[in-house]
Amino acid sequence: MDVISPQKMQLLLAEYEVFLTGLSHRTIDAYMRIIKQLVLWIASQNHNRGEFYPAELTGAALKDYIAYLNLNGYSSTHLARVKSVVSGFSCWLMESKGILSCNPTSGLSIPYSFKEPTVELSQNTREILLSLVKRSSPIRTKAIFALGYWAGLRVGEIAWLRISDTSVNSKSGSMKVGYKTGKERSINLIEAARLPLYEYIYLGGRNQNSPYTMTSQRHERLTEAGIHRWWSNLKKQAIPSEYRLIHDVTFHDLRHDFAVRMYKEGWTLQQMACYLGHVTKDGTPSLTSVARYLE
Image (cartoon, rainbow, N blue to C red):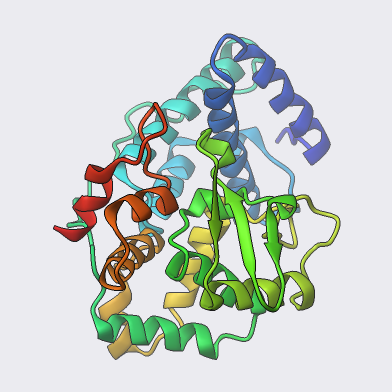
């Protein structure tokens, strides 16, 4: 079985990225993220020490990967995009490199799961989640949860948060988020969000050489997939009676719940829109976007 080392895989991905020239920078970045996450997942499943065996990129493997993403809360829209991106990459491997003999996406169906949006978490659900975080020993767990629950950040905003844009100390904290979406905004952090982040940055074993705020042992930043995996593992630490109440709560639901709680604290829709990053193309707050949290 042919094997592609991590170094050769980097060169192959770089070559494919050049092949995508003509698409927007944002689209290319999204495509490459999806492909890299798939390659890492396949390598990790078979204990290949980071090496990628093209023969393992099969329809069965891709079906398992889609099921894994679905289990970890990714939307049907994202799953369809993964299929489309992998299909294009596979065609390139077949036609330009002669590495694959068939397209693994052929005949692959995407599971459709409709879930009513959770706007406001019950108090019982909040207490269970807060208790799980409190009982968890890693300082990073407390920091990630705090940014979702007490600051309403999206998974992608946390994953791409740069340390140069993160300013926290024992008394105040602020950050610039959203640069990967092209909608940067500066926000101030309340104490409940600031203190866990402060402890993680200065006491929590963060990789000091990384330009990103949230780091992992494998990469210079904690990826979106890593955050979804962390969230799933955190919920699984609950006892059965608790897990039944929280198993379908996504990390994004924390953002919705944050908006509801802030509105009850007296925030205006305009303040909420600016803080959460809901703005129109001309930069004005999108009040209708945040109003749906309160319906």
